[in-house]
Structures are given as structure tokens and as C-alpha cells.
Amino acid sequence: MTAPKPPKPPSRADRVSLWRYMKLFRADILSAQPARLYHAWMAEFRTPFFRSFMINQPELIDTVLRARPRDFPKSDRIGEGLRPLLGNSVFLTNGDTWERQRRIIDPAFEGGRLRETFPAMVAASDACAARLGARADGGPVEIEEITSHAAADVIFRTLFSIPIDNHIAQEVFHLFRDYQRTQPILNLAAFVPLPRWMPRLHRRRTRQTARRIRDLITRLTTERMTQIAAGTAPDDLATKIMTTTDPQTGARFDTAEMVDQVAIFFLAGHETSASALAWALYLLALYPDWQDKVAQEARTVLSDSPDFADVSRLRVARDVFRETLRLYPPVPMMVREATCPETFRDRAVPTGSQIVISPWHLHRHDRIWPDPDDFAPDRWQTDAGRACARDAYIPFSAGSRVCTGAGFAMVEGPLILARLLRDFKVSRVAGRDPVPVAHLTVRARDGIWLAVTRRGPETVSTAARGA
Image (tube, rainbow, N blue to C red; front, side, top):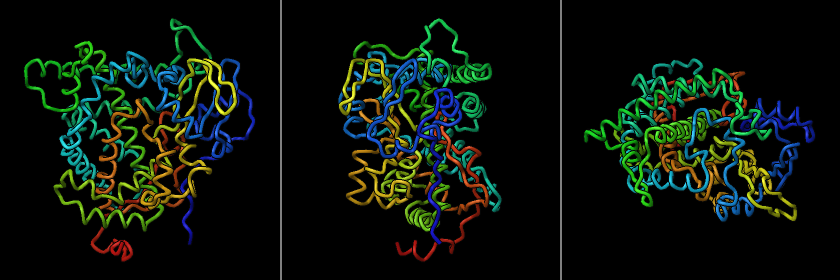
């Protein structure tokens, strides 16, 4: 029997009123879009307040993200919904401020830092396996909860050298989940240009949750600054960032700036990995032959004390993770703003226009990818697949604003995936297949529920053993 396609949200009717579009967008970014965007090179949307252009043509995306990023800064409209939590973080800033922040942050993620943080990732993956093992009785498990916990654990172990079981880390983790439930990415200021002094009408619970998260991060950051001053700080990412000086100005981040950056590290780093891991586990439940291949590779490669070099040998797990990021990119859309008049595809793009780049649509574009809605991890080992990736694969953005933690995610994701499937088997739960929705990131509307059992010595198929 042919396996079903990976779940994909329905598209809206091609023409709807602005009010209807706003309601759909607020409920789910993905199903608010028309089906033609999976085929179009560019599409224009007009509102009474601004014009918006979605671009799918690789050459145009290259212009915006790589060739001329300063001419297309991040749009403040999307940032309106995130500012209560992220403040003036590197995710929201532009121009000289953003460049200064990246000069301080980037050194922490260069060179051998991945190797240095690898033991923390291993410890987090082992802790995740222990938590999952306590529930591996064949009953339904909400797997997004498991992967969110694991990704948060990696963030805290690599950033602050504390496991998620630390009481502050645990509270931040739960508050972040609460924040996502209360904060739609669209608010009034995203559509109507408002002066800075005017209140943004964020929900009370959203403001309270953001304030509590920032208070907890401030406590961690202040404690670390005290340790740095005393010479007792651990050599982790937080210490590296907080002791790095801007080579142009000699300045460091103060506490307030560091709180902004930690908030985005947690939101972006945690959300990217948690979302991708949850969808990867579901896809492997949907396609058990691929699950067996990952499990067999993990049993061959991963010892109880894996070495950093082992990650390069997790080729199947890496291709599964890449393919998951193609089908379910955690950040479904990025919005830039044109700072001067442009002409795209012989069409005038006025100053102030919103330029929308959608990894969700680009990764499933039917004029770029063969069988775009299929789960096909083996495409990453073909010349055609690698060519598509060069032109149209941006799960971490691209150009100067590429995600700082992209390399971390591509180590953490395959490692945790392989570690879990080495010991456990995941299966679909009848009647509970997930429906993708997007608010801040691509998640499942009612969670991703899988049955989890321990993997015995004979649960890897003959086909997988011979692969």
C-alpha cells in the first residue's frame, strides 16, 4: 500500500477580502495563502496601507538576501509582534546596530566551538532518551513536548552550562511555550503604520509572559557577569559572547543587550530544532523503511559515548533532517522592506513595499523541486537534488543574515534523531495525524502524537540492514 503524502495545509481561495485574509493569517500563516504560490515566480498583494510582493524566483531571492541585503532590511511589521520578548535583539535590528551585534556574536559560533559544545549536546540527547524511555509503553506520546524539552536542554547546556532541570531553565522553557500560545505573529501594527508612541495592544498575558521570561534571563545574565568578574565563569557560549569586544568600538554587550540576545537564541535555536525534530520523527513513523535505515545507521555509528567525528557518519539521519527542513521549514516566511524603488520581473516595486520570502513555498515549488510534496531523503545524494538545494533551500535564511546557529542545528538535529531511534521505535497513532499550522514557527495544530516502544535487537528490517 502506498504511504500517504506528508501532511500539507489546505490553500485558501485565490481571492478573498482583506478582512478575511487577516482572519485567516491570524489563525495560520500557511492556509491563508493561495495555491498558486507553489508555482508562481512572484505574486503581488495590495492592502490600503502597503504593497506586498512574494518572490519565489531564485535570482530575486539572491538579490534580496545575498547581493543587496542593506537595500532590503528586515521589515518592522513582523517585528511588532515579537518586540515584547525580543526587544532590540539581532533578530529584529538592521543597519549599523545589527552589524555591531553580529561582530560580537559571530565569534562564539566559529571554528572549534561546535566541537567544544558537542559533549553538552550528547548529554542533552541522553537525557531526552531517558525521559522518552519512561513513556515508551506503546501509548500515545505528544512528541513536540519531548523535542521542545530536548532542544531547550541543548540551549541551556551550551549557553549557560546548566541542564534544563535547573529550576530557572525549566521555568523559562514553560514560559516560552506559554508565550507562543498567546502571541499571534499578526497584530494591528503589522497592517496599519502606527507611530512609536502609540500602544501596540499586545494581549495582557503576552506582556506578562514576556516580562517574566526576560526577568529570568536577566537573573542568569547578571549571575554570569558576576562570575566573569570573579574569574569563575565556565567557558561556554554565554561567557564567550559576554567577553567579546566589538573590534571596531571595543564595547561589549551590557546586561540589557545580552538579555535581548539570549531571548532570540532561545526562541530561534530552541524552536528551529524542536519543530524539525518533531516533524522528522513523525515522517519516520509515516515511512518506517526510512526509520529503520536511521536506526541501523545509529546502531552502527553511535556508541554510548559518541565522538564529534561520529556526526559526519550519520549520513542518513542528516539527509532525513535536511528533507524535514525542506518540507517543514521552522520559519515559514521572512519579510524584508524595499528602501528604494525596484523593478522585479518588469513590475514596479515602490519604496516601502514588503518583500516576502517564503521558505515554505520555495521548498515546495513545483517548477524547482521534482515531486516537491514527497518525503525523499535520498534526493540529497543526487546531483539534481543538490542543484535544487543551491538555488532554493533556505531553512536558515541566506546571505549575511543567515542564522548564526545553523551549524549547531545541523549537528544537534541528526544527533538527537539518531540517538532516539537507536533505542526507540515510533509509530503513527490512528486518527491523530498532525495538521501543520504556522504562527511563530511551523508546528502541529493539536500536537504530534506518536506511539513509542523500545527497539529490540530484531526490530530493524532486513532491507535496512542491507542498505
